[in-house]
Amino acid sequence: MFYISFYLLDEHDQLLQGKLEKEKQRLDAIIQKKELEHRLLMSQLNEIKTENVKQEDVVLKVKDDILSNFADLMETELQCSICNELFVFVSILEVDR
Image (cartoon, rainbow, N blue to C red; front, side, top):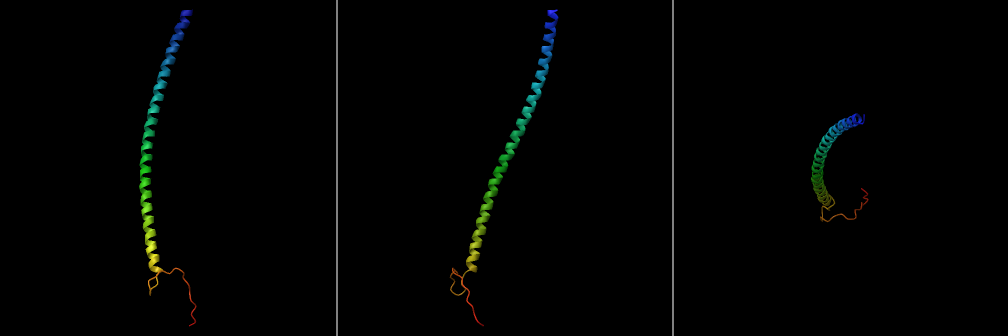
């Protein structure tokens, strides 16, 4: 009777070991898939960060260009047509005509 129950326990143990091994293989495959996805996402993130830095540089250059053009425009617009000095304190004179 003890031999039969040891035999049944051993057989049950082997069955459970087989199920455990299959589950381990399934989980290992899932882990490998997730690690691959993680590497892909990290690669995409790095590409996006690099592109973002490039875009920021372009935006800064455009901003500097706009400010420079604006300064030049204001200098020409706020310049006296007679003496070519810049208007610093603009005043309006009332003229009775």
